[in-house]
Length: 236
Length: 236
DNA sequence: TGACTTCTGGTCACACTGACTATAAGATGG
DNA sequence: CCATCTTATAGTCAGTGTGACCAGAAGTCA
Image (cartoon, rainbow over all chains, first blue to last red; front, top):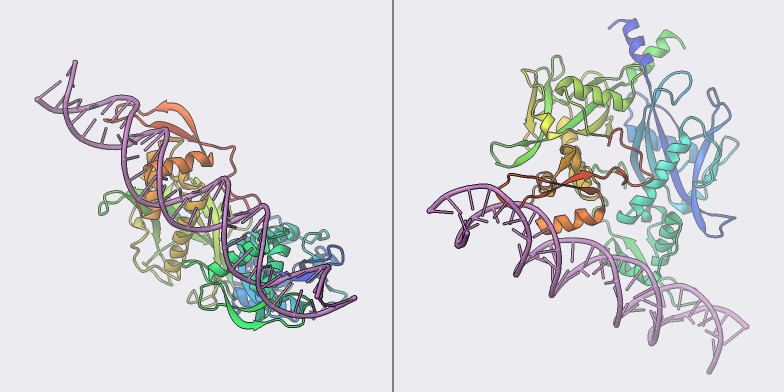
């Protein structure tokens, strides 16, 4: 293959990997926890200075999911508890000045860790439902990722990715409520979760709370996270 | 950007688009209709002579979905009734001799038209559940596409893509049965479909059948094909 | 000790679904 | 013209899952 041929191939489309990173954070406005995500400031044209999803080109030997996890680590210093491919965006006009095809992943990080995440002039967390105008088609991408998260949290068992090793059902319920943006009946939630077999009673209880002490549960690893047949998420 | 820089970028990964094309065909073995898909014979290394999914590189100005539809048209001469992105496969080792990232789509074509599809030495239809060893990771890709089709046919309204403009509920049921590989109760199927509002009674009936003439239905365009929030499929 | 809060177990009504029964409406063969 | 056959279509019934709601349990705190 000649240099020209390679150049022509290259000029067709560049390949990039981006990640939509979700964490739960207490919202000064809402009182309760809501969904937040970190964005990075563009340091070059196009969209210089505007906020965008973390990501970049795909190195030669790196897995797609690996590149997504790296973008996450490099911007936030965190490790994803859940990571799954979202969609590949390839509209020829989505990037002014050279076509870019973006393979986008979405990730969930533990809320406790998320509080320690790096944040500076060029990395900032935003409430997922109130984003500024982002570079490229990133607003649309986040919207789709949000839809996917909200849909999937209802039939899958990904909510625990926001929590630590052990947790109360009230904490797990708070995650669902934050994601779905609606209140859930505690008793019905308990019934549903318990019958799903996704959590295991540790036998421990929380002490010191000014009411009946809740049981502590653990995630049940023996139950499969996704339906059989589905591609395994990169992490989860 | 220098030529070297461009070359390095290019050498990282080539971009390709492939399509898993499903149609229903009468199966000589099974008697009833089953799922079939067209494959093309590789005309060069690697995997020279082996069967593979239709596809190829991504031209400069072409939409991803456009490239998928073109692969479909060029191999079968058909137009997809349904076309949706499946997944992007990017394992660095999935293609011997140069990394290839493949954006894969899946498509449904009308069974009547599928019977007229091109077939020659280098294009042949295979039963989806009994494929030969394919090039690259294409067996795995088809398996995932099959899983997605079978999952989606249960909650979405894509089955009509295998049928023409008007159809009986028995025909629609036959599609579901062929995809899901199990018999469905006619009365219950009717109840479910009618209450879903996805079909409209045309008032016409089939004549000349040696039994009670079935009503003819039409697809209800006013009901959305996918859930709100989901990305629109390219066609559907 | 009583008030307060959340945890947790339970009931009830309703919607949905699979299994099944029964009737409708044509063609076909005697 | 009638009996028969086949599929279409309507309806019933029981079991299951879920939202709404009620009530006791079990701690802390004043």
